[in-house]
Amino acid sequence: MRYDLTDLKLFINIGETSNLTRAAEKIFLSLPAASARIKNLEDSLKVRLLIRQVTGVKMTPAGEILYKYAKSVFQQLESLHTELQPFSEGIKGKLRILANTSATYSFVTEALGNFLQDNPDVDIELEEKITRDVLAAIRNGTGDLGLVSGNLDMSGLDVTPLFKDELVAIVHAEHELTDRDTVSFEELVDNYQFVGINQDSVLQTFLDERAHQLGKRIHQRVYAGGFDVVARMVSAKIGVSIMPLECTLKLGHIANIKVIKLSDRWACRERYICRLPGRDLPPYAEKFIQSVLDVVKKMGLNDAKAVAEK
Image: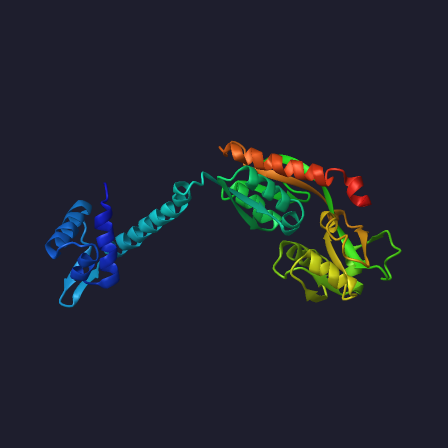
């Protein structure tokens, strides 16, 4: 059966007003024309949709179902219009990228800047998620490219390796741990207060989960808005912190902090770009991947030894 959009809009108006006359007026129909449309709709569906009353009209159970799905149709059409609108304004594409906090702070920002300058007709939709949610989104097709890290089950995905990264501890230069080469996460949780980024951030959620697995809880002295602010608070002796080694490369302007390796195996992580195999992504997706690879190479992130020395 084919549905007429005017009929569906009329029926939505009836559901909102419970009055056939006012519903018809909203779409500039006469009352006889609106009545004829409803009768034809009922005849086509072979079901009664409305009950006429002195005070107006009431929907039957079948009418309620039609009303629900008619509203859904127009919501979908509105979404369609919204997504097509940029094309009429000269934007010819959109890329949906999922990443975590450390990626957006370190190398993704520069990669995005380079890519968008070279591709002015493409928009980027960047969303921060924890790694497992990134993988889920790529597998179910709600994301185009995912930037992930860790020892992960990447089965069923196309993967482009980027570099090796690790989580490290940040302490004040005069902290009692300064002479140590390594420290465990458990020792930090047991003995020191922490400075962390936003409470709802991907990294903070990950660290809270690790502490929970140890049967412990991080003593969080303060939450800050980003890695720069966290480092300044560590420099002010407010607490210790944990962040990706790649992010410490941008903290050279902050004095009196020391980077110490974490001894936990989970602290060493591989970083990847992943996508769903067989999915027909536009050519500019490949251009974005190349932009990321170029920035990684420029920053020296694909040389783990060089990063550690920095």
